Length: 168
Image (cartoon, rainbow, N blue to C red; front, side, top):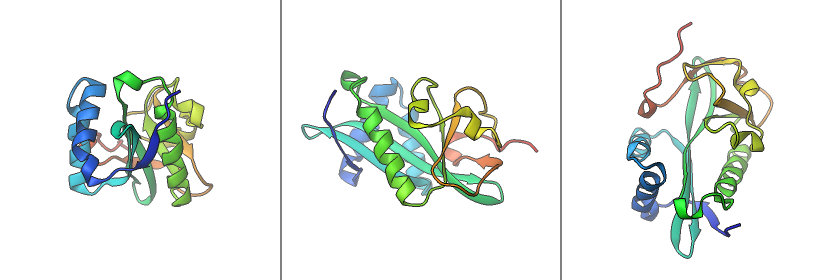
């Protein structure tokens, strides 16, 4: 298990984070999404994992709106440098990010991700079931951080993702 320091991302980390996402995903799409989310002011939280002064992991949480209701947050993109994947860095990033969001009063977090990874943290398809989005399926999950609204509704993703609002 790799020991990384998880901390808030700073402007000085920006280039390393964009390069890391491109390297980890093998394409520049995620880096473009991060830049668009930054430009539109849709970011709630960004954390990095650092080892020996090098950024080896990154997680981003964005504002997720619910049509006509109180919103929550979305998770992603998240990346870990390929040379330290499967060493627990992604787990550290998710756990720290969820802790910060819970302390900040965020009611619910949504993720479109691996069904073998995110359920370890309590994410489930069932918790996302009452929310409408074209992304619904076995990989669209939610985690309730506190009781109360929103309990259902149509999800509105930031424009950076290009996800249409579900039809009523």
